[in-house]
Image 1 (tube, rainbow over the protein chains, first blue to last red):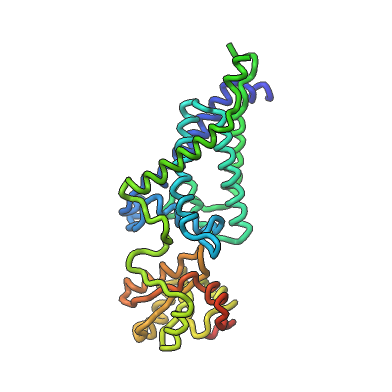
Image 2 (cartoon, rainbow over the protein chains, first blue to last red):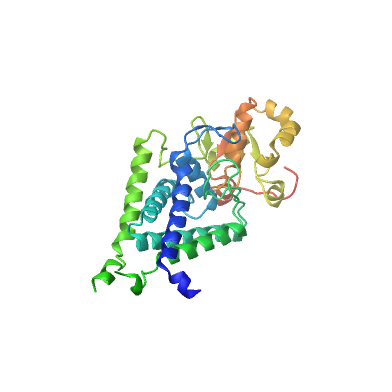
Length: 168
Length: 157
């Protein structure tokens, strides 16, 4: 089993999976435009970045609060999807694989802690903001934490150093 | 060994990825045409009226009707004296019940549980659609409490 996990192809495959998930996760938060929701037909007044900022507010971690003005969660919401996209693309193309995978792992730890903390504080997150930012989306729950933990394991596999014997 | 150097972790690379993402994100927000104002609260849309607790209290003293957009459990646990319960999750039924009173009110202010809460904004917008203009109490019930204004428990307004 250990030999199998150490196989370079496993790290490559894990990088592809994590890369795909991160690129997909960034899509709606970056590209969604204002207009009717394709699924519900409901008119959405906000674009993807602003919708994602709404989701970030609901977590009540980076504000807005009496200490943190709206600019803090807004900048977070505007930049995080692009960090996901850049890291995801690097993993897909196999560039800076170890560092991009470690960054994805760090982001996943942040997501797991955020969702866990929201659940702990009794915040009802109907949409976790993981993939879709509007409509129903995916609810934040234990299932999400399990999924993120599996993805975290994949990121750490992708971040592994290439084994000696496979090098030319 | 050269192979080891190739596969070595470079700590600056994650920083470059974060910086590149941040620059792209901010530039996209600025230039794409569907960004938003970073300084403002995204819950507040153009046309929304937001009032601070002292102004809300003054308006209530002059006859404004305050509405609590949180769930009934929160209302019973503590609400602004005189405020009626109009939970966002039960908007249609609660609106039907309160409609005559709402139509009579010339000034309506909605609140919920503060920063992370959007219910007051949603209720104010739904009221506007029904022809009842409503303002939103900035930072909601916690701001009211923090201002040292009275709070009442139970089902009675």
